[in-house]
Amino acid sequence: MRLILLAAPGAGKGTQAEILSEHYGIPTISTGAILRKAIKDGTELGRTAEKYINEGKLIPDDLMLKVMDERFKNDDCKNGFILDGFPRTLAQAEALSASPIEIDKVLSIEVDDQTIIERLSGRLECRSCGTTYHTEHRPPKTPGVCDKCGGELGARDDDKPETVKQRLKTYHEQTEPLIEYYREKGLLRVAKGQSEIEETSKVVFEALEA
Ligand code: AP5
Image 1: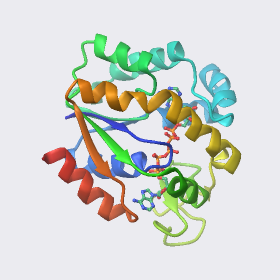
Image 2: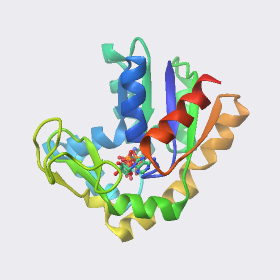
Image 3: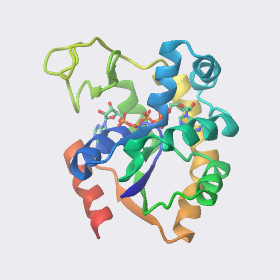
Image 4: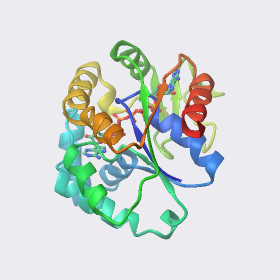
């Protein structure tokens, strides 16, 4: 299974990717996680990416494509993968289509902007391992502490309301057109996001296995 998850920021790509990854036994490649690690490590990529991420904008295509070229060379990609956050522009999608990598399915998870704003205001992320929680929908067992690694939980810098507004604008302008691009290729599956994580997983599996 080589799957692309296509959805607005905060629609639940990362959350569903974690569940799908476990179910299919394939890795998730999250571009957001790669970039946040680069920022944490203080690399050149991280220094460049930070400025764009904090403004709610996309990092330049040539840079993203270079990062993904390297990532696809990893051995763990051999039996399939879930792409969470890539491609995100028409140029990235066309570069992927022109590469030897064959995508099997593209899943669009539909969630309206108002729900996204509400969800991102309650999102918590582990500062050590990146696991995502939600104050209401997926609370940690101990407040402020990651269930998986015991790390400290906090809000993401780009979840500030004004940045979320810009990220949604960026999504509608630059990423949403990919839904039609992949529909025309016959690869698109659509799942309507639900108000709870488990219910969304159910419709996600139904859409993928139909
Ligand atoms: P990235 O990290 O990919 O951010 P994003 O697309 O904005 O997505 P998020 O991680 O914010 O949300 P998600 O859809 O994974 O939702 P989640 O599962 O956490 O990218 C960050 C930045 O990096 C970009 O803005 C850009 O600058 C740059 N970048 C990345 N890729 C790039 C690319 N290809 N090209 C250029 N630049 C790139 O869920 C959200 C919250 O809701 C959580 O708290 C969760 O617990 C909760 N939740 C999830 N599902 C449900 C549900 N069904 N019901 C209730 N709560 C739910």
